Length: 190
Image 1 (cartoon, rainbow, N blue to C red):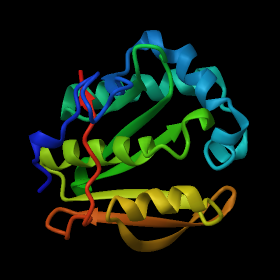
Image 2 (image 1 turned 180 degrees about the vertical axis):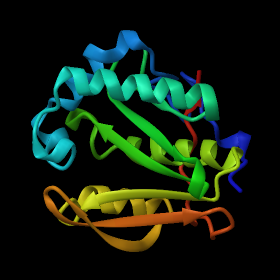
Image 3 (image 1 turned 60 degrees about the vertical axis):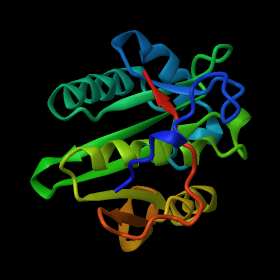
Image 4 (image 1 turned 180 degrees about the horizontal axis):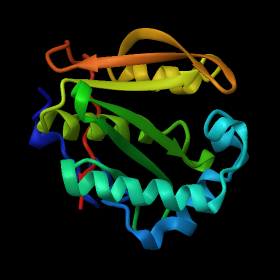
C-alpha cells in the first residue's frame, strides 16, 4: 500500500517550490475545467477527439462530487498560487468491481515536468486508502505520453479496449502489486 506521508509535498516546500497542490472540484469549476478540456492538445485523445460541451463537463463534475460524497474519491484540480487550472485528476469508482478508473489531463504548458505522474500517484494513493483493489487507466493506442505516465506509475498492461477513436489500451495497478522503484512525491490535497 502507498502510505508514505514523508513524501507529501506542501505548497512552498523544497519538493514543491511552485506550490502545486490538488483541491476538490466544486460546481464553480465548470468553466475553468471546460477551458482546460477544450485545448486541442488536451482533448486530442480525450472526449472522443473533440472539444467537450460545457454541459457534459458540468454533468461530469456533478457525478464526481456525488462520487466524493459516497466514496471519498472524485475529481481534484491541480493548481498553484499563480495558476488556477493547470490540470485535473479523477478517480471514477466502480463499486461492483472494487476498482477505480484513473483519468488525468494537464495543460500543455505544464507537460514534461512530472505533474501528470504526481497527480496520478496521489490519486492512486487515495484509492488504496479506500476499499478499492484495482486502479485502471486507459488511453488510445497512439497516446505515447499517457502510456509513459502509466508506466511511471507502476501500472502494467491489462487489456486491449475499443474507444470511439479506435483501439486503445488499459493499464492496471492492483493493491499489493510492486510499487515503482522511483515513487513520485505525493501532492497535498486540500
